[in-house]
Image 1 (cartoon, rainbow, N blue to C red):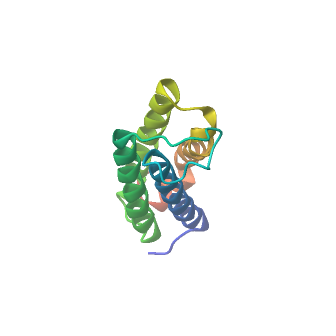
Image 2 (cartoon, rainbow, N blue to C red; image 1 turned 120 degrees about the horizontal axis):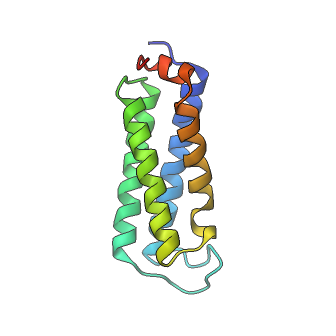
Length: 126
């Protein structure tokens, strides 16, 4: 199946979000204390596990988008909403806007973009 440029951009953004979630996972494991406004180590295994799982899911989703899998559109919508919910929980509990700003902005833009009729048509979900 021919891959439109918008789907290619979505796949590249999914790779970036996988990388971003992997960095947040390493921060919650205490390996990257120098990133962010907090100068000390934060260790939270629950958040590290959750963001590690999200990094794996985003990498898998990027592979699905690259192949223009018909189920990728629905899976992308579900994972984007789930990632927004996780970022909101992190923001409410112990995080700051600095921790989730790129993720929230990119996920909101992805959610808006995938609801356009042309993108839905590329995956055959009209």
